[in-house]
Each structure stands twice: as C-alpha cells, then as structure tokens.
Length: 447
Ligand SMILES: [Zn+2]
Image (cartoon, rainbow, N blue to C red; front, side, top):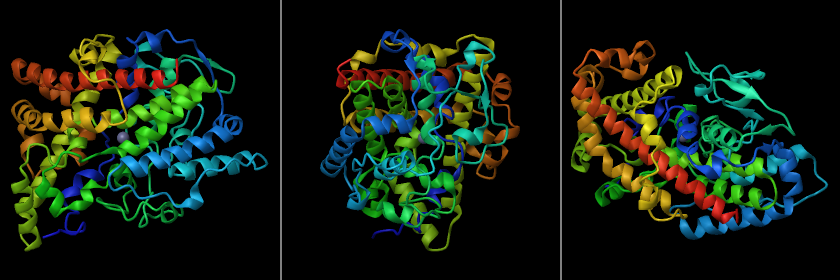
C-alpha cells in the first residue's frame, strides 16, 4: 500500500517550524574553522559583488553549470532534470541583472535571493564594528521574534578575513534561497523549475518549502520507502555539490572572496545533516510504529499520530534550543562549554575517509541517522519531562518564553553532564565534517 503524501501531512508537522537545524550555523562554524590553519591563516580577501564575479567568469560558469547538471543526472537518485531553457549560457552583452537572474535560475534557487555583501560578526569578539545591516537586507524571510542576528555591511574592495566569510555564508542558505521552488509553491519561479510538487510539508508555509533541500532521509527502512516513496525526494546533496564546485571554480580563477563564500554555502547542507532530526524521518521511532500510527489516522483515529508529531517536533526544537542557548552563553561569557571544545577538537578528522561527493550521504547522514535512537534516550532522561514527553505541550509555540538553561540548572548535575556530552558529540561531528569538506574543496581548487 502506498500512502499519498497528503495522508502524511501530519507526520511532517515538525517541518513547519521556523527553527532550523543548528539555529545559527555561523557561530558553530567560527569555532569549527578557527582551529584550521588553512582558514585561520588564509590571507584576507577582497570583497567582490556577485555580478562582478559572474561577468568575469561567464564562460567558465557555463561549462561548470553544465557539468553540474550532468553529475546530478548521473549520481542523484530521484533527480528531476533541469528544464533545458534554464541552462546558463554566456552572453557578454546582457545586463548584470539579467546575468544574475540567469545564474540563480540555472541553479534553481530563489531568484529574489539577496546575496548581499555582509558579514555576521563572531559574537566572541565583543561589540561588532561597522555599519549594521537590517535583517531584511540579507534575508527574504520575515525576521523571527526575539532575533539576535547581527549583520555588518561590507563593500567591494574591502579586505575581510576568510574565516568571517566562510562562517557567515554557512548560515546563508536559510535566508530564503531554497524557498518556494516547487510546482505547487506560491511563487512565479517554482512552476518553471521542474522540481515537481513539494514532496512533504505544507506548501503554503514558506519555511516548510525549503525542508526537502535541508533534510535528507537517506537511511530509512525499505518498508518505509515502499510505503512513502516521496521521502526520497530530498536534495541536500545537489546543493552541496553545486556550491562546492562553484567554490573550487572561484578559487581557481582568482576570486577568493567567492571561493570562501561558496564554501560556506556548501557547508550549510552538510552541517544540517549532522542533526539527527534532519537525517532521519522519526529518530527513535520504529517503522512499525510510524506505519501503525499512519494507518490508524487514515481510519480516522488520529490520536497516536498527532501525539507522535508533537513529540518529534518538541524533541527536535528542544535539542536545537539547548545547543543555541549553550553556545550563546559561552560566547557572552567567553568561556568554552563542552560544545565549543568539541567543535575545536580535530582529533577525529582523519578517522573519516577523505571528503568526496558522496561524503554527505555515506558518512555524515549515516552517522547522524544512527545516532538518533541513543540521542532520543538521552533527551528523555535529561530534559524537563514536559518538553519531551508531554504531547499536550507544543514547545514551538512556547519556546520564546522558556529559558532552558535556567530550567536545566534546577536539575541533577549528572543528567546535565550527560546531555552536554551527547550534544557535544554532535558538535564534534559538525566540526570534523566541516573541516574535512573545506580540505576537500581547497584540494579541488589546487590550493
Ligand atoms: Zn538549513
């Protein structure tokens, strides 16, 4: 029996939250990459507009984007071919704006993406210097309540640190680049992109439309794939490949600012997949239970399924909130927690195979999916029970008013240490894989 994607809408209720894996990638990326001499000691780079980069590399980009399409067709499962009308062709006489539009639509990302010139300063360095940019200057999505984001304007020719460029860009794919790309999206461009209908999640919620690019369910059971084949239609590997090969091209052709920026954009997708809730559909739940809950719901008994959706969502959000609060507190106090120490630790980097175009699937998401069940046990044992075990509480609607670290401070220190160790392990993976990807991209750039 194949279940229609609509029958599963509730299972994907968890995808409708504005909180994304590792809420702000930049902060963790600063810590992961500042210990890497190739990044920390890289010469500062001169800022360049996207239009200028595209204009000077138009011919090489035409060839690269054609090779990306060939790679995707040959290597990605369930890859929908790009409509040939979207191919990027060198046309030196066209306007900068027309070239930019052609590039973004050839990549099949949102054509209104800002690609502003900006940095997200490292909060570890105190009050940032420079001209602040409003949220809306870098991001097409509405600013969340209580947003703590800070952006600083940079301009062409400015010399900026490679670390700041790559760490800043590692958060950028969440700024609207992958929004409304589907046939059934409320956008002009979605219908022309050929990605098909949105495989899961609510098409009218902008945040949900990006999920199939930022999650990858590559290690589910055969039974689940047979029942719900649409869960295979996820594309983080496409994005990772597009941006990593763009980075190598930019480095090779003398555009190091865009080399580092595309490197950061590419890292985002790898980092998302280090989050167990982005690498498997329902961490800690058996296929049998998922299918059972779904079958009951189809017969009109939705209780089990509704509870499962809420609990999955709550655990997902509580994990990310813990990581965010811990790292923000560490940045403010300038005292490393176990999370920063894990991000700094390079001991395991060499224990993984060298970075390659299947690394995301074979190494990163395999590891994250496998970590799910144990992680869920830890969350259940260490978090306040109301947040992880009570389906009558919707954590997503309450979390703005919750200070999780303060709540945890009232609990048993041994439990707190267990939780910190578990999340530090995930941050260790985030760091090791990010560095391995940077090494791979630099190698491909002959640097
Ligand atoms: Zn993301």
